Image (cartoon, rainbow, N blue to C red; front, side, top):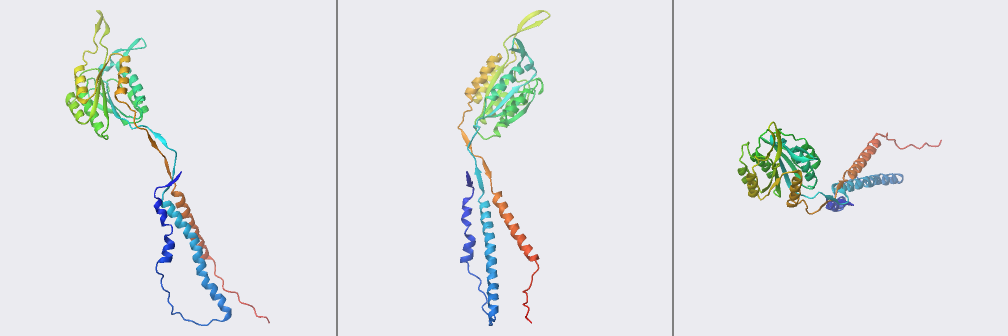
Length: 342
Protein backbone atom coordinates (compact mmCIF):
# COMPACT_ATOMS: atom_id res chain seq x y z
CA UNK A 1 0.00 0.00 0.00
CA UNK A 2 0.99 3.65 -0.41
CA UNK A 3 2.05 5.58 2.68
CA UNK A 4 3.89 8.79 3.60
CA UNK A 5 6.79 9.08 6.00
CA UNK A 6 6.01 12.75 6.74
CA UNK A 7 2.31 13.25 5.88
CA UNK A 8 2.01 16.50 7.86
CA UNK A 9 4.02 18.25 5.12
CA UNK A 10 0.90 18.07 2.93
CA UNK A 11 -0.83 20.55 5.27
CA UNK A 12 1.29 23.27 3.65
CA UNK A 13 -0.64 22.91 0.37
CA UNK A 14 -2.81 26.06 0.87
CA UNK A 15 0.18 28.19 1.95
CA UNK A 16 0.47 30.14 -1.36
CA UNK A 17 -3.26 30.95 -1.31
CA UNK A 18 -2.99 32.18 2.29
CA UNK A 19 0.02 34.32 1.45
CA UNK A 20 -1.76 35.81 -1.56
CA UNK A 21 -4.98 36.66 0.29
CA UNK A 22 -3.90 37.54 3.82
CA UNK A 23 -0.58 39.31 3.62
CA UNK A 24 -0.90 43.11 3.13
CA UNK A 25 -0.66 44.03 -0.51
CA UNK A 26 1.69 46.72 -1.64
CA UNK A 27 -0.26 49.86 -2.20
CA UNK A 28 -0.15 51.09 -5.72
CA UNK A 29 0.71 54.69 -6.46
CA UNK A 30 -2.54 56.54 -7.18
CA UNK A 31 -0.84 59.70 -8.48
CA UNK A 32 -0.76 58.56 -12.07
CA UNK A 33 -1.62 61.10 -14.72
CA UNK A 34 -5.26 60.90 -15.75
CA UNK A 35 -6.20 61.88 -19.25
CA UNK A 36 -9.26 61.33 -21.38
CA UNK A 37 -9.00 58.69 -24.12
CA UNK A 38 -10.72 58.73 -27.44
CA UNK A 39 -13.48 56.17 -27.80
CA UNK A 40 -11.55 53.89 -30.14
CA UNK A 41 -8.64 53.61 -27.59
CA UNK A 42 -10.78 52.55 -24.63
CA UNK A 43 -10.99 48.95 -25.86
CA UNK A 44 -7.23 48.81 -26.41
CA UNK A 45 -6.59 50.06 -22.88
CA UNK A 46 -8.98 47.47 -21.38
CA UNK A 47 -7.31 44.64 -23.28
CA UNK A 48 -3.87 45.84 -22.19
CA UNK A 49 -4.99 45.92 -18.53
CA UNK A 50 -6.42 42.41 -18.78
CA UNK A 51 -3.19 41.00 -20.22
CA UNK A 52 -1.24 40.82 -16.90
CA UNK A 53 -4.20 39.13 -15.23
CA UNK A 54 -4.29 36.42 -17.90
CA UNK A 55 -0.56 35.89 -17.61
CA UNK A 56 -0.85 35.61 -13.82
CA UNK A 57 -3.65 33.07 -14.18
CA UNK A 58 -1.60 31.01 -16.65
CA UNK A 59 1.41 31.06 -14.37
CA UNK A 60 -0.68 29.93 -11.42
CA UNK A 61 -2.07 27.05 -13.47
CA UNK A 62 1.51 25.82 -13.82
CA UNK A 63 3.04 26.86 -10.50
CA UNK A 64 0.29 25.39 -8.33
CA UNK A 65 0.84 21.81 -9.66
CA UNK A 66 4.62 22.28 -9.23
CA UNK A 67 4.09 23.38 -5.62
CA UNK A 68 1.84 20.41 -4.90
CA UNK A 69 4.30 18.00 -6.52
CA UNK A 70 7.17 19.37 -4.41
CA UNK A 71 5.08 18.94 -1.26
CA UNK A 72 4.25 15.40 -2.33
CA UNK A 73 7.96 14.62 -2.75
CA UNK A 74 8.80 16.23 0.61
CA UNK A 75 6.19 14.04 2.33
CA UNK A 76 8.32 11.03 1.23
CA UNK A 77 5.79 8.71 -0.40
CA UNK A 78 6.71 5.05 -0.20
CA UNK A 79 5.24 1.75 -1.24
CA UNK A 80 4.95 -0.68 1.67
CA UNK A 81 5.08 -4.33 0.65
CA UNK A 82 3.71 -7.46 2.26
CA UNK A 83 5.26 -8.48 5.63
CA UNK A 84 8.21 -10.86 5.29
CA UNK A 85 9.51 -13.11 8.10
CA UNK A 86 12.95 -12.31 9.47
CA UNK A 87 15.42 -14.86 10.72
CA UNK A 88 15.02 -15.03 14.52
CA UNK A 89 17.62 -13.18 16.53
CA UNK A 90 19.60 -15.98 18.13
CA UNK A 91 22.88 -16.27 19.96
CA UNK A 92 26.42 -15.15 19.31
CA UNK A 93 28.01 -18.58 19.10
CA UNK A 94 31.76 -19.10 18.66
CA UNK A 95 33.31 -22.49 17.98
CA UNK A 96 36.98 -22.95 18.88
CA UNK A 97 38.46 -26.03 17.16
CA UNK A 98 41.84 -27.55 17.96
CA UNK A 99 43.95 -28.13 14.82
CA UNK A 100 47.19 -29.06 16.59
CA UNK A 101 49.28 -31.99 15.40
CA UNK A 102 47.45 -34.52 17.59
CA UNK A 103 44.21 -33.93 15.66
CA UNK A 104 45.77 -35.98 12.85
CA UNK A 105 45.53 -39.10 15.03
CA UNK A 106 43.51 -41.74 13.17
CA UNK A 107 41.37 -43.24 15.91
CA UNK A 108 37.86 -42.34 14.71
CA UNK A 109 35.90 -45.09 12.91
CA UNK A 110 34.14 -44.11 9.67
CA UNK A 111 32.80 -46.62 7.11
CA UNK A 112 34.83 -49.53 8.56
CA UNK A 113 38.09 -47.60 8.63
CA UNK A 114 39.87 -45.28 11.00
CA UNK A 115 40.17 -41.63 10.00
CA UNK A 116 41.73 -38.60 11.67
CA UNK A 117 39.89 -36.64 14.33
CA UNK A 118 39.68 -33.37 12.41
CA UNK A 119 37.84 -35.03 9.54
CA UNK A 120 35.11 -36.26 11.88
CA UNK A 121 34.92 -32.87 13.59
CA UNK A 122 34.38 -31.15 10.23
CA UNK A 123 31.60 -33.58 9.30
CA UNK A 124 29.69 -33.30 12.57
CA UNK A 125 30.20 -29.54 12.90
CA UNK A 126 28.85 -28.93 9.40
CA UNK A 127 25.59 -30.63 10.36
CA UNK A 128 25.46 -28.74 13.66
CA UNK A 129 25.94 -25.37 11.94
CA UNK A 130 23.11 -26.00 9.48
CA UNK A 131 20.73 -26.40 12.42
CA UNK A 132 21.71 -23.08 14.02
CA UNK A 133 19.37 -20.92 11.96
CA UNK A 134 19.29 -17.39 13.36
CA UNK A 135 22.60 -17.60 15.27
CA UNK A 136 25.69 -15.54 14.53
CA UNK A 137 28.40 -18.16 14.13
CA UNK A 138 32.14 -17.65 14.33
CA UNK A 139 35.11 -20.00 14.09
CA UNK A 140 38.43 -19.86 15.95
CA UNK A 141 41.19 -22.29 15.04
CA UNK A 142 44.01 -22.86 17.48
CA UNK A 143 47.21 -24.82 17.86
CA UNK A 144 50.37 -23.20 19.19
CA UNK A 145 48.51 -19.92 18.58
CA UNK A 146 44.88 -18.96 18.02
CA UNK A 147 43.36 -17.00 15.16
CA UNK A 148 39.90 -16.13 13.87
CA UNK A 149 38.99 -18.16 10.79
CA UNK A 150 35.39 -16.90 10.50
CA UNK A 151 34.12 -13.71 12.21
CA UNK A 152 30.63 -13.82 13.67
CA UNK A 153 28.21 -14.13 10.76
CA UNK A 154 24.77 -15.41 9.76
CA UNK A 155 26.29 -17.00 6.64
CA UNK A 156 26.39 -20.68 7.58
CA UNK A 157 27.39 -21.72 4.05
CA UNK A 158 30.60 -19.69 4.15
CA UNK A 159 31.24 -20.91 7.68
CA UNK A 160 31.06 -24.55 6.57
CA UNK A 161 33.32 -23.87 3.58
CA UNK A 162 36.04 -22.17 5.65
CA UNK A 163 35.82 -24.87 8.30
CA UNK A 164 36.39 -27.50 5.62
CA UNK A 165 39.54 -25.66 4.49
CA UNK A 166 41.16 -25.96 7.94
CA UNK A 167 44.13 -28.33 8.06
CA UNK A 168 46.08 -29.91 10.89
CA UNK A 169 49.19 -27.94 11.81
CA UNK A 170 48.16 -24.62 10.24
CA UNK A 171 48.40 -22.97 13.68
CA UNK A 172 51.30 -25.05 15.02
CA UNK A 173 51.60 -28.50 16.57
CA UNK A 174 51.04 -27.61 20.23
CA UNK A 175 47.83 -26.54 22.02
CA UNK A 176 47.08 -23.02 23.35
CA UNK A 177 43.72 -23.43 25.07
CA UNK A 178 44.04 -20.24 27.12
CA UNK A 179 44.81 -18.11 24.06
CA UNK A 180 41.80 -19.56 22.23
CA UNK A 181 39.49 -18.67 25.13
CA UNK A 182 40.98 -15.18 25.41
CA UNK A 183 40.48 -14.51 21.69
CA UNK A 184 36.90 -15.79 21.87
CA UNK A 185 36.09 -13.52 24.82
CA UNK A 186 37.49 -10.54 22.91
CA UNK A 187 35.31 -11.33 19.88
CA UNK A 188 32.16 -11.92 21.92
CA UNK A 189 32.43 -8.85 24.13
CA UNK A 190 32.41 -6.71 20.98
CA UNK A 191 28.84 -7.85 20.47
CA UNK A 192 25.81 -6.44 22.37
CA UNK A 193 25.43 -8.20 25.70
CA UNK A 194 23.08 -11.11 25.19
CA UNK A 195 23.57 -14.88 25.16
CA UNK A 196 27.30 -15.34 24.40
CA UNK A 197 28.44 -18.91 23.98
CA UNK A 198 31.79 -20.56 23.22
CA UNK A 199 32.11 -24.25 22.33
CA UNK A 200 35.73 -25.32 22.68
CA UNK A 201 36.86 -28.63 21.20
CA UNK A 202 40.29 -30.11 21.87
CA UNK A 203 42.03 -33.46 22.18
CA UNK A 204 44.92 -32.47 24.45
CA UNK A 205 46.19 -30.28 27.26
CA UNK A 206 47.37 -26.70 27.36
CA UNK A 207 50.99 -26.81 26.19
CA UNK A 208 51.46 -23.35 24.60
CA UNK A 209 50.20 -19.81 24.64
CA UNK A 210 50.57 -16.72 26.81
CA UNK A 211 47.34 -16.99 28.79
CA UNK A 212 46.60 -19.60 31.43
CA UNK A 213 43.31 -21.40 30.65
CA UNK A 214 41.81 -20.85 34.13
CA UNK A 215 42.69 -17.15 34.04
CA UNK A 216 41.00 -16.91 30.65
CA UNK A 217 37.99 -18.75 32.08
CA UNK A 218 37.72 -16.21 34.88
CA UNK A 219 37.71 -13.35 32.37
CA UNK A 220 35.08 -15.18 30.34
CA UNK A 221 32.85 -15.56 33.38
CA UNK A 222 33.15 -11.83 34.12
CA UNK A 223 32.18 -11.08 30.50
CA UNK A 224 29.10 -13.35 30.73
CA UNK A 225 30.54 -15.82 28.21
CA UNK A 226 29.40 -19.38 28.76
CA UNK A 227 31.92 -22.04 27.69
CA UNK A 228 31.03 -25.62 26.81
CA UNK A 229 34.15 -27.76 26.53
CA UNK A 230 34.44 -30.94 24.51
CA UNK A 231 37.21 -33.53 24.74
CA UNK A 232 37.62 -35.72 21.68
CA UNK A 233 39.58 -38.90 21.09
CA UNK A 234 39.24 -42.67 21.54
CA UNK A 235 40.21 -44.34 24.82
CA UNK A 236 42.14 -47.09 23.09
CA UNK A 237 43.40 -48.16 19.72
CA UNK A 238 45.52 -50.96 18.28
CA UNK A 239 48.98 -50.02 17.13
CA UNK A 240 51.01 -52.39 14.98
CA UNK A 241 54.76 -52.29 15.32
CA UNK A 242 57.83 -54.46 14.73
CA UNK A 243 57.17 -56.17 18.06
CA UNK A 244 53.52 -56.93 17.27
CA UNK A 245 50.15 -55.33 18.01
CA UNK A 246 49.54 -53.49 21.26
CA UNK A 247 46.76 -51.40 22.77
CA UNK A 248 47.43 -47.77 23.55
CA UNK A 249 45.41 -44.85 24.86
CA UNK A 250 45.55 -42.14 22.16
CA UNK A 251 43.84 -39.68 24.52
CA UNK A 252 46.34 -39.97 27.34
CA UNK A 253 47.26 -36.29 26.95
CA UNK A 254 43.65 -35.05 27.19
CA UNK A 255 43.32 -32.85 30.28
CA UNK A 256 39.72 -33.63 31.21
CA UNK A 257 40.03 -32.06 34.66
CA UNK A 258 41.02 -28.71 33.13
CA UNK A 259 38.22 -28.78 30.57
CA UNK A 260 35.65 -29.64 33.25
CA UNK A 261 36.88 -26.78 35.47
CA UNK A 262 36.68 -24.27 32.61
CA UNK A 263 33.09 -25.29 31.91
CA UNK A 264 32.12 -25.15 35.59
CA UNK A 265 33.57 -21.67 36.13
CA UNK A 266 31.69 -20.21 33.18
CA UNK A 267 28.34 -21.95 33.65
CA UNK A 268 28.83 -24.45 30.83
CA UNK A 269 29.21 -28.20 30.60
CA UNK A 270 32.02 -30.60 29.76
CA UNK A 271 31.42 -33.36 27.21
CA UNK A 272 33.48 -36.36 26.15
CA UNK A 273 33.30 -37.83 22.63
CA UNK A 274 35.18 -41.04 21.87
CA UNK A 275 33.72 -41.76 18.43
CA UNK A 276 31.65 -39.99 15.74
CA UNK A 277 28.34 -41.16 17.22
CA UNK A 278 29.13 -39.67 20.62
CA UNK A 279 30.33 -36.46 18.99
CA UNK A 280 27.03 -36.14 17.12
CA UNK A 281 25.15 -36.74 20.38
CA UNK A 282 27.15 -34.00 22.07
CA UNK A 283 26.15 -31.42 19.47
CA UNK A 284 22.54 -32.58 19.66
CA UNK A 285 22.69 -31.95 23.40
CA UNK A 286 24.21 -28.54 22.76
CA UNK A 287 21.23 -27.77 20.53
CA UNK A 288 19.02 -28.50 23.51
CA UNK A 289 21.11 -26.46 25.94
CA UNK A 290 21.44 -23.49 23.58
CA UNK A 291 18.11 -23.29 21.72
CA UNK A 292 17.74 -20.90 18.78
CA UNK A 293 13.97 -20.56 19.00
CA UNK A 294 13.17 -16.86 19.42
CA UNK A 295 10.14 -14.63 19.00
CA UNK A 296 9.22 -14.33 15.33
CA UNK A 297 9.79 -10.96 13.67
CA UNK A 298 8.31 -9.50 10.50
CA UNK A 299 9.69 -6.93 8.09
CA UNK A 300 7.63 -4.86 5.65
CA UNK A 301 9.86 -3.82 2.73
CA UNK A 302 9.56 -0.15 1.77
CA UNK A 303 10.30 1.36 -1.63
CA UNK A 304 10.81 5.13 -1.84
CA UNK A 305 8.73 6.95 -4.49
CA UNK A 306 9.63 10.60 -3.82
CA UNK A 307 11.73 10.85 -7.00
CA UNK A 308 8.63 10.52 -9.24
CA UNK A 309 6.78 13.71 -8.16
CA UNK A 310 10.13 15.49 -7.90
CA UNK A 311 11.01 14.56 -11.49
CA UNK A 312 7.58 15.66 -12.79
CA UNK A 313 7.89 19.01 -10.99
CA UNK A 314 11.32 19.50 -12.54
CA UNK A 315 10.02 18.71 -16.04
CA UNK A 316 7.11 21.13 -15.67
CA UNK A 317 9.47 23.87 -14.50
CA UNK A 318 11.83 23.25 -17.43
CA UNK A 319 8.89 23.27 -19.86
CA UNK A 320 7.60 26.57 -18.48
CA UNK A 321 11.07 28.13 -18.68
CA UNK A 322 11.47 26.91 -22.27
CA UNK A 323 8.12 28.36 -23.34
CA UNK A 324 8.93 31.76 -21.82
CA UNK A 325 12.34 31.80 -23.49
CA UNK A 326 10.82 30.87 -26.86
CA UNK A 327 8.25 33.69 -26.56
CA UNK A 328 11.00 36.19 -25.86
CA UNK A 329 12.78 35.15 -29.05
CA UNK A 330 9.71 35.73 -31.22
CA UNK A 331 9.78 39.06 -33.19
CA UNK A 332 7.35 41.66 -31.95
CA UNK A 333 5.01 43.02 -34.69
CA UNK A 334 3.35 46.43 -34.47
CA UNK A 335 -0.32 47.10 -35.10
CA UNK A 336 -1.19 47.16 -38.84
CA UNK A 337 -2.15 50.48 -40.33
CA UNK A 338 -5.44 50.83 -42.16
CA UNK A 339 -5.25 51.94 -45.74
CA UNK A 340 -7.36 54.97 -46.60
CA UNK A 341 -9.69 54.69 -49.57
CA UNK A 342 -8.85 56.87 -52.36
